[in-house]
Length: 204
Image 1 (spheres, rainbow, N blue to C red):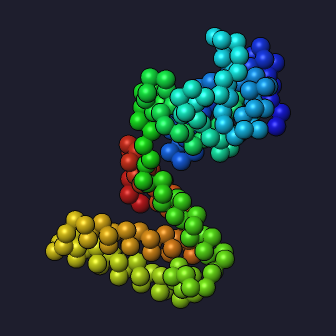
Image 2: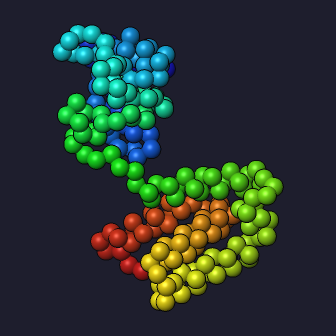
Image 3: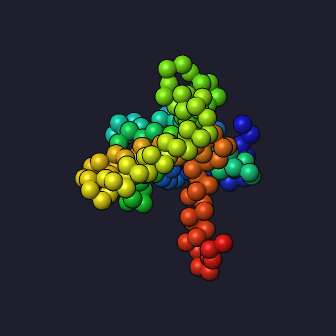
């Protein structure tokens, strides 16, 4: 990876982002030595502009930043480092240096679930329920979405909240399987809803 350390006096900013939640956790700076140590140890090491030395995040607190991936920007002078943090990131004890909570958004799992279902579609392993749905064909998959939607309605009108969530989850799963069979993504539905939320949107 080519990094232009010389543009800013031998340092480049390193944006630290949680690999799972996509929350920005902090900003630090790296020189070539800090970058190399980060790559070698898979734990983020910065260059301290105050102390004029290298420091590995977590070396005193134990709150290490475990590297998942490192990307360079289009100008080769800013790094995006995705990590799995161990504990709070900020020295004040907060999850991020902006005082924000680094909670996982469960909605992000829908993308992960579809990625998993796509792998099932490619590999078609024996004994998998998802595989059996793909083998049964489009009509069966569409029928399952309808069946689960009906069960959702029944629970909404005559059931419990717990069962409503359960049946709704079944419906979402089968809908994602159906979308995958058509080469579509759940994110496309989210994008459609976002478009409808914009001022001036008209039903077509």
